[in-house]
Image (cartoon, rainbow, N blue to C red; front, side):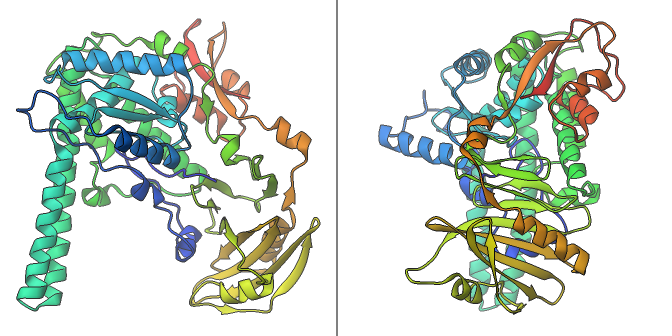
Length: 494
């Protein structure tokens, strides 16, 4: 189980709706914010180079980041391609004395960030959204701009100021309510400050991309693809896109705003059609890259979730889509039903009955504990009724661990509960043959054949849900756009 949510530095975060919020009392779904490092800082401009941290600190930070993002993704030719782009950008930047090193992370999240020592991190999920080297250059140049503009240091100063003002009002003037108001105003100011930093990094990045000879319009193309990817994910979960009017509170500007400003910045430095895109070179570099969840961290095939490394499988109720998190597996259906699965330890001598009686969801009225035999495994389940939601809680003994499954529904009808129970009863061990056969989805690069359409190419992909839309978004095509014969495209393959 591994984290899925986040279009972080480069965009908006996705949050599950309806019943997912009801499960927030069991655990947070924002582990990413604690796992990811604060966006970039740099030494003062007067210094000739960023002072490198001690080797032990670099190793520890590298290990922490890798652990939060599924480890380092080993694809040497792709990593070398990314570092060539970074070197080209660094040479053309306003700080050519700084050098950067790109590390590829094994995560389907769409994310990129930089550290003060020049380490840049990019997830394979972000690269799956990009379609040429100029788009990747825009991402890297944006993160480099955060370093050279010292945004992390500036943000930390603003946070300290906001906290200091609230403490002065609360402690010195002895007015806690006014202190909370001051802190809230400080947070709004900080959100606006962060948005300004993102836009500044976009502008600086576009200029640097152009100086390095890349197509400066790559930033706007990537932002459009990222926004469409977010909308596709939201639609797959049965949610509605966020209301535009709420974007002003985001730490990142809305995607349409960023696209508009990125295009404006590009027009100041070059006309459309100029600059290096290097589409084929980039697509060749990502050919064969893992797409979506890595089987070592568990993965979904439709409603079925398999975890080959841990050796179990189960099937979600009808209509569910999975989100695989670092600490939990989350699922949501369009009608608001939700589920959460994670692992826990029993105390020495503790029975499953005692465990569930002491660990039901706070603020609910638990029902009678029922014992089950799940395909040879000991398990217990109970219903717990809250004020607005009803939960089915289950604990399954699996070797030295227990797996906890929590289902939630606002209106738990007998039919919905039968679906929850059927899902619970589907939990089983994987055979060795199933474990050996588990393979990740991959991106394969193929050329458009004579007569191909979006529909015909999508039909060859190893996905069935919204295949045509996925193919279109994956390759940055407008809906219904014709496919030139011989054009290289990304397809999802097994």
